Length: 116
Image (cartoon, one colour):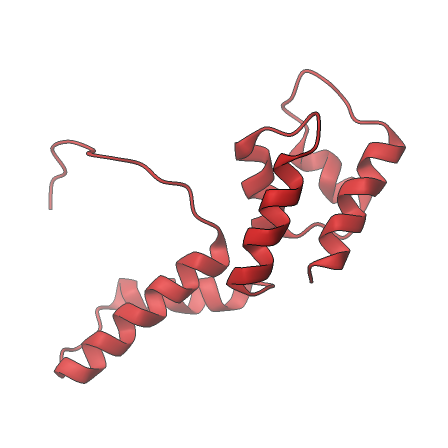
């Protein structure tokens, strides 16, 4: 299948993706269609890596976007990865032109811990 043009782009969190894939899986089972290998693997991957619920991920995303040095793409990465330590969080910020202080890192980690 060739894609000729991209019509729109929307960022979603991993728990939202998991919910969408589960809905597609239920529709296919109800209609009696076979699930392709790629769909099964995508569902397995999203289920394995999703660490929170859709509501909690949206709440965390909203709180992260309120922070001063937070860009939307970084906020989505934090919600998807749910880092547990400063090193994991620093790895997310590795490509940025600024570094976060220990207080800022701890504030982000506290938000993540509150939404797990």
